[in-house]
Length: 471
Ligand code: GLC
Image (cartoon, rainbow, N blue to C red; front, side, top):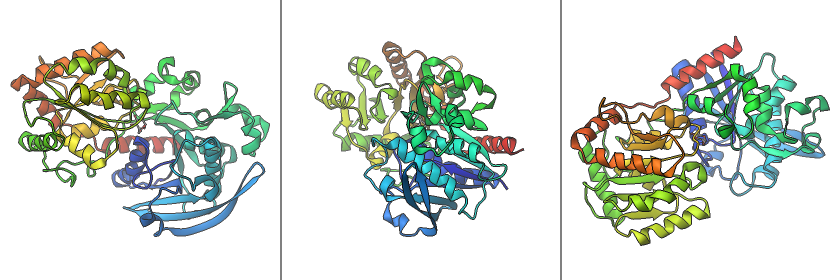
């Protein structure tokens, strides 16, 4: 039985800012169930972790970690939740703060976390075969494990969930924080700076990303955020494994947030739609197609395209609801929109899980025209709730949404290739045509109903990867 230790900075249900937390919160159990691997997870203990969990923690050990001149105490805890063992690194100075990222010393905080994980390895009653680290916050663990060899034969896998965030710090931090001799500097340096993601790409035995298309895209300067030369060097060890979703958690047949649950009944789905239309004061009318977005309001999510063409699209008899928060520019746009289209648009500038689920259940179309999207979970949730995705062909969106072809009858959504607002507008018009054509719409929905994006397949791919790397 393979023993794998996941290292990450967030994990559902304990602490979450994005899709990373969903993956860390669901993949370990999937690996256990599909291949009997013992996968455990080590995380920082943030203030945000609810007491209902932390009061059940078991004490494991206490030790010191030195970071340059600073010596810090760490308490290590373990906690079993739904069949998976989690370890938490507690240190008040670095992690007892509001929120989880966005501090001037984030780099230092995760250097500390990485040193603490290395020290924790000696205290655990668990000797992993593979350290599997996720995103830049855990990247240094890969580098330190390779250099320090804390466990004989220990292998490393590094997964890129988003190459845009790399953990970049002044090069002086190398001598301040790393406790390493100068010969190792080049493995951490990129463009004159310390770069945590680079250190992982340089040191990892295997590198993965969260979809096959993204694995190809990041070889190109348009997507690589400057790291393509290094990725080309590591090409043989780079692969893409598509994320799944927890299909128990996201299941319209059991979701307690819904007005009425359903499997693939369009009638019941339309009862949810009428409920939401009424709740938000829109015309209750099944024949008006309902388009939604549930998203962080950042440029990555294609919001400049939306801004450019949505007012034009709203000249047609369609409804649009947005749920999300984020950058001021986009919040301002969406705050204004319902004033211009009071009968058609609602903007909910907040985050509310119950409402999100009700939107997935009610909508006809889910919009996600991302500029880049390593995998994307929302389009998968939409498909689970039998809502048709409209996406740009990038990363995981390209790998999960097949454009509907009204001649062959294939496809589960709508997509466009270039990051261009009028290409998006064009597929929005296509979606409207199909919605208004009962025969084509039925063909499309039939395909949507057949989709399955659970973890099964991907868990097998990870297991194979672990087998290869430990051979
Ligand atoms: C990041 C990516 C997203 C991906 C998620 C989980 O948030 O932006 O595309 O789905 O990580 O891997």
